[in-house]
Image 1 (cartoon, one colour):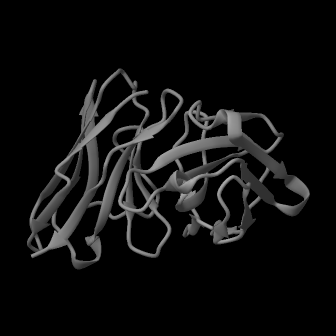
Image 2 (image 1 turned 60 degrees about the horizontal axis):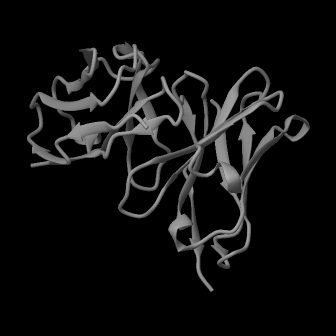
Length: 107
Length: 117
C-alpha cells in the first residue's frame, strides 16, 4: 500500500497566519492527490484535487502544490472557520490511502 | 446540492454482518462511482471500496474476503455488507461520491457502528 505521511499532526496558529501542511507519498501517485477538510459532526469537504485544482466554492485562501512525492496544502490567511482536521489522500493506486490528519487549532 | 446519508444499525454483535445503506438526494446515482470509507475512533481514514452505478466494484484487499458493496439504482442507494465483524471493525462509516482515480467530492456525515455483544 502507498503510505501517505502527513505533517504536522497538530498545528496551532493565529488568525491571519499563513499555514502549511505537508504530505509525502511513499510511491509515485502522478497527480492523484486530494485534500479534505473535516469539522466534527459534519461531512468531510473536498478542498483541492489533482494536486492543485481548487474545488468549486472553496475560498481562494486555500491552495495546493507539489510534485513527485511531496505535496502541500496552504491556507494563506487563517480564518476562524478554518478550525478543522485536514487530510490528504492519494487516489492513484488501490487501496486509496489517506494521511494521518492535521488538527488545526486557532491560538 | 448532492446530499448523502448513511443508515443502519449502530450496534452489531461480533461474528455477525454489518449492513449500511447510503441514500443519495439532490443528484443521480447514474454515471458516478460511489465509495465507502471508515475511521476507527482516533485512527486514520480507511478506504473500504467503491462501486460504479452499473455494479462493477473495487475493494480494499484487506477486507475483500468479508466485503460486499451493492447498488440499487432505482432507489438511488448503494450498500455495504461486512461479514464476520470483530471489535476492530468499530468505526465511523462514511459514504461518498467518487472513486476510480477520482477524488471524493461529496460525503455523508458518517455513522458510528460499534461491534460489541
